[in-house]
Length: 244
Image (cartoon, rainbow, N blue to C red):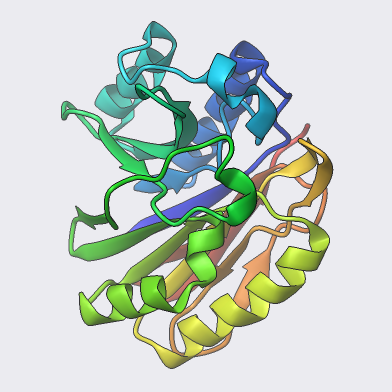
């Protein structure tokens, strides 16, 4: 299987422009014969906690139909970061679009304390079966928690997916931690970060893909827009930068 992480620079609250960025990256993934593409945390709106309630979408929002259409036409699985409406505070969610199947919504269930005033937690971890692989889905803060890593290992995950919005300081913690996980476990690891301004910080990019058991990795750097991924059958890394 070929799975990739996308890196983009979302515009705060500009869903229409952000969709266009998503489509360009999905097209690049299709050209690279990817089976799966995942985007950063809240990629469709930008990571903007103070705006999350007004930006939150329903899963049935017609603006999301373009992703289902692409799945149905191209066969690629797409994971998009979206704030999803609830009766209280919105969820931080990954919406998984698959060919001619209902949307799977994974809601971040381990929230950082800074997120508690703006978001509500989801119910439980989620694993996704794709071809012969088991994908463990994590969103930002969750990705580095031992409980998430243990859950993935104990449930025989083969790919650990981290959809994040991280600063340079946090990336300097995340990359070595995820590298150790890939090297010491039987999992490939793919981390998708955004770049540019988010809320009150600058996202540091450096989306990275790690081969299992080797310590080998490749990343996109701080400012690039593109995709980074792994081919699980060939045990190889994939990188493609696209013009901004």
